[in-house]
Amino acid sequence: MSNNKQREGLFAFWREVFFISRKLDMDSLISRIKQDGTVLGADILKVDSFLTHQVDPKLMRQIGKVFAEKFKDAGITKVVTIEASGNVPAAYVAEELDVPMIFAKKAKNVTMTDELLTADVYSFTKKITSTIQISRKFLSETDNVLVIDDFLANGQAALGLISILEAANTRISGVGIVIEKSFQTGRALVEETGIPVFSLARIAGFDQGQVVFTEADL
Image (cartoon, rainbow, N blue to C red; front, top):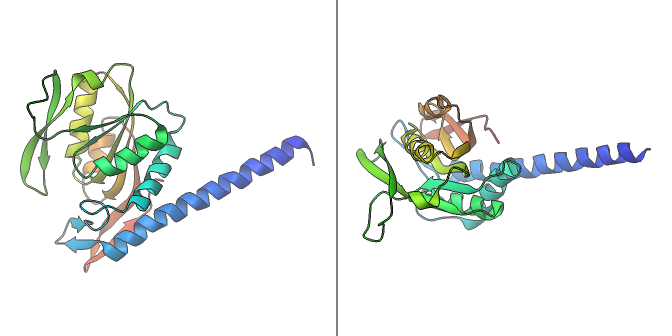
C-alpha cells in the first residue's frame, strides 16, 4: 500500500473516530434531557438540574469541545452570549477555542461607564423586556464572533445579540445552541439574517410530557 493510501486510510479512520466520539458526547446531552428534563405546559422545558441553575461541568466541557471542533478553523476571536444561563456553555466553548468570552448584561451597573451597545430583548418565558448591553470597547470591526446560548425558542435573545454585534461591525460566523425548540420560530428568524444556526439538541415537540427529538445539526 502506498504512503498516500495509508495516510488517506488513517485520516478516514480518525474522522470516523471523531464522528463516533462527538455522537456519544451529544447522546449524553439527549440522555440528560430525557432523564432530568421536565416538560411544563405546551412549550417549556425545565433543565435546571444540569444547565440553567445547577450545572454539570463534565457535560458542559463536552459541549464546549463539540462547538470548538466545528469552528476551530473559522478564525473565531470572541464568543458572545447573554446572561445568565448562556454563560457556562459559552465559557467552555471559549476555553476550547482559546478566545475571550463576552456576556451581554441585562442590567446596567455603576461600573459600566464606557460606551454601550444595547438591544431590547423580550422574554416569552418571563414575559418581560430587558435591555441587554455590551461595552463597546470589547468589540471591534476585526472580531469574528461565535454566538452561544443555552436555548433557542422564539429567537429574541439571539436576534438581540446579532443586533449588537452588527452595530459593532463584527463578523458573525454562527449561532451555536445547546437546546433548540424547533417547533418555535427562532431558527427561521435567525436564519433570515443570513447567519447559520448549529444546535446540539433539537426538539420537535412535546407528547404527553415526553420530549420528541428531531435530527440535530452537530
